[in-house]
Image 1 (cartoon, rainbow, N blue to C red):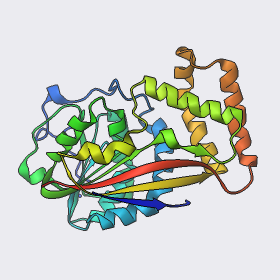
Image 2 (cartoon, helix red, strand yellow):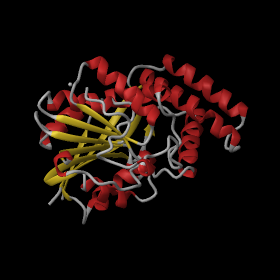
Image 3 (spheres, one colour):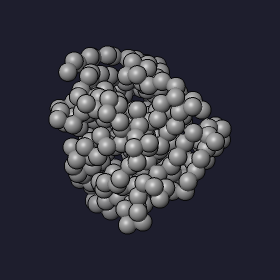
Image 4 (cartoon, rainbow, N blue to C red):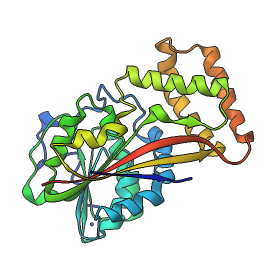
Length: 299
């Protein structure tokens, strides 16, 4: 395994939510997996799109480096609202195909509309809980699999990696992406910003999220995927971008913070005020985030 440290500043054939050739009714996931505490559906799309846009140029380069090309069959595991699905559909072209899998019907509804608006005709949506197995026909196995910000939500990510392996052919590749939020930083922190960041980490960890999984992702793949490379990449966000993302995150978590008594209304009001004032910060990066990319191959 080789470690690469890169720093950067910066027709649709819809077979229904679950194709009967993939899973039985008993295997279909509910729309509320217990380990997933983020918003789903249309309300989740804004933050997910912003995160996607921030890493887009690097992601396209890494996908090329890992061998993604036109005509391939690709699995987008944990597709969410389809931000990555749309990119993959474009890259594999009309002769390729994308299977977009997510546990949430609400997420898939948003993704389906976005794919239709793009005019892609090479996507099949699959509703399924990744913590459960299902049989995949040989002609549905992929040449490539992509998973982003998924394993951090699962109680047993190693088992999920083994299930993902079944989605690709022998010799097929994967690109896995997970963060290490424990190492995120602020360029010009104030007490409100620091307390807000701590609160978000705490509420996520109590819900079972593993915010430092990215740093262990390569090791987790051992014995499942043959790891070819690990990319460690820092992303830096300006004050305006930080403001947009934090505002969405606070709206998403506000009720949980209050009901769990992890924050008072006064603290939350202070965080809203702090976020509103981020637009007045000087130019330059304000917050940074660390993301790990692992490229593996099924032997």
